[in-house]
Image (tube, rainbow, N blue to C red):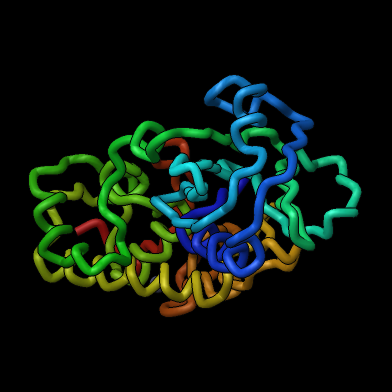
Length: 276
Ligand SMILES: [Zn+2]
């Protein structure tokens, strides 16, 4: 199963691209897989990007937002298998490079994406594309009280709720499993059934696993690479996420279980994370 980039991976891409691309001008755009451009037309996308200066990069959920000198934004979503690599302008594309944003500096941005599911948009405003995302879990306005309020009366399994980008932005399968394990909460518990203490534990665990993921430059369990082409090491810290069945809980030694929730494999310890 593919493990897609989540908040810590996208945040790492943003942090590591920033020093190399800010202040640079886009000199041309090469598309080997034009279908990744969702808006506007491919011709317009390329012609409107050329000559623009990159003035900033932000992250919203799993989206990367590149601010342009015109005031427009270039928005990139890595989806399942995308990576943005910094390569010297002279580098030839390998077979998984789907687009190159050529810059006037030493490096270009190479969009590598084996599965071709990544997306790019050029928009006047990010809200046109990212829509209504939930709160950013690492912002100061995301408090245990916010989480408690959001979970009130929710009957869906907590794991499914955490994966909903409109509920909370940027958390995906890996970090949701890790946060639930750290908080000792069973992934099938209805969201609204969590006690205030459990919500506080979960809030703390979400922030802790995300910060740790960022500190370790993301999890390279599959196809994720940092802009340098190096891998992240966050997956070495994972307690349950993507452990093979037969692996044991690092806390109590019980075999880790895997169950499907909303078509995603959920890993948990049936002893540390009891259903009640
Ligand atoms: Zn355990």
